[in-house]
Length: 221
Image 1 (tube, rainbow, N blue to C red):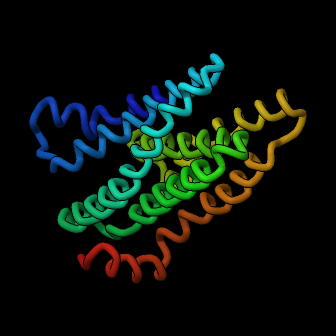
Image 2: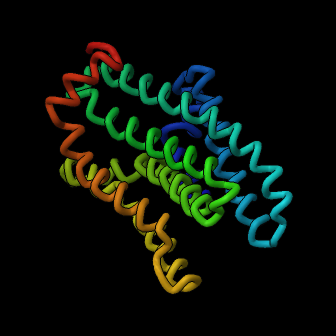
């Protein structure tokens, strides 16, 4: 997950920053720092748990909670700014991609809220919910590449982009079978909620309902 996230931004962030070809608001850099810090902390946390250093894992988890709290408003802010840029550039249907932004950050927020609430008494739920939230970050980052695939109709690309998430859910299911002999309820719950949401997003993003609602949330073209 961390590798995919780090390797997803050379064209949209690293190179423009290094070359000075694009000026970013300060909050863009704050957003990048916080999101990269979260995934780095998650990698560290999984290693601590794997080595049995649970007390240390819990102490550092407080930093993870703080980063999560910062990521959610930053995520919504970035979604709003991206829509404004598309409007200013005269893009056709500028609000379609905003639906994916809103769904992704809201899903991450709900997964992490549930994970934090269940951390003490339901640790197996906590593990799987956090894993799925991290996979969501991976999905969102990877779209910087998947949406650039040439010669594919945008509607198909929208659906196919979510395929980045499914190998991680499959790995989680395989882990359940190997360790429990069955699927954990958290794995089942995440799959049953996320799969219909993903499959419907390409239609909702293009719907009159969303495109009539979005200007009130984002601002008119």
